[in-house]
Amino acid sequence: CYTSPTSCTKFDFLNKYVKSNKQIIIVGDLNATNYLWHCASNNNKGSHLLELINNNQLIIHNNSIPTSRKSNNIIDLCI
Image (cartoon, rainbow, N blue to C red; front, side):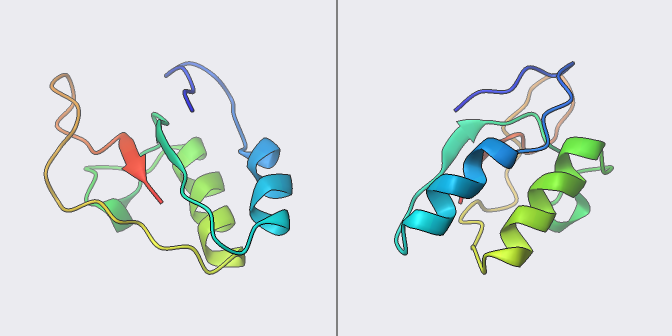
């Protein structure tokens, strides 16, 4: 999936998929930053995504290699 850098996405739309599938892979250019996945800072989308991850016992499968050339952050995630 894709969320633009300027969107205010809270990732609520992913809840129904996560709740209805015990095995799910989420991959996307999410533009969500968080210290947990080795970003330089947190943004609101990163906080909302972390809440989704924690509430549903999901796992981030990225390593610490940045996926953004503009910011040196990891904004393309595999969950």
